[in-house]
Image 1 (cartoon, rainbow, N blue to C red):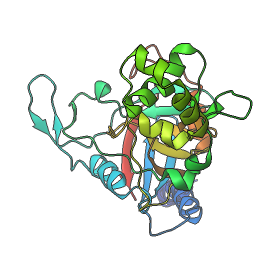
Image 2: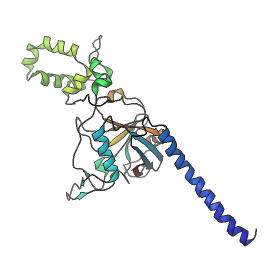
Image 3: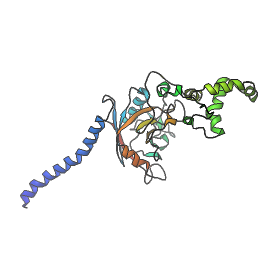
Length: 286
């Protein structure tokens, strides 16, 4: 091969290689859009050390929380430094890692404790339609006297914390004497109690303005510390989790890249951001 031929051939090869390298990304984005329920919905891409995940955000089902998530992605939300109280507006998720990994169940990221800049100034209310989920038709106590598995009642302590103490509070019961005096009424209320009412007694408030879907494989929902405490932290469900329905606001669904989420869940790290952690290089709206 002459020097002249080589000079003409190499640029052509470089161009061909570059075009081949670009094809998978374009194909992924194209197939992600093809898998969307509604192409008018926002589509975001998580670029991570394990691969790309594409998420369709469900704007009509959780409008305020989707708007907040997109603002955090774009660096349009004020973040307050915990020590100096200085305010920043970074692209919140870029450079963070998936800090909670439960194989077969979920992967989670976005904890303010793991963000160098701090945390957003405000938390958002839940956007959940319990009626659409059927929680108003689910009995808390089953015909055999056991509690509905969705409530995760495993011992006396969880029974008291989840059902009894909130019910007593709702009924205005303040003492052991009140419990003894109103035992028949308590028993009747327990038999009539729905899962929705159990959650309402815990402080959850629901809306009928928007539809809500159950948490299933590929659902993207916001982590929280209780009712109406939505912030930047989110999780991707790896399997159906009906015991989470009604307590976590669903903001999206993975349309491409669930195999990446599965792969991330199998990784292990001593600490978030440590060796072996899956780094989020960037989240961006497409």
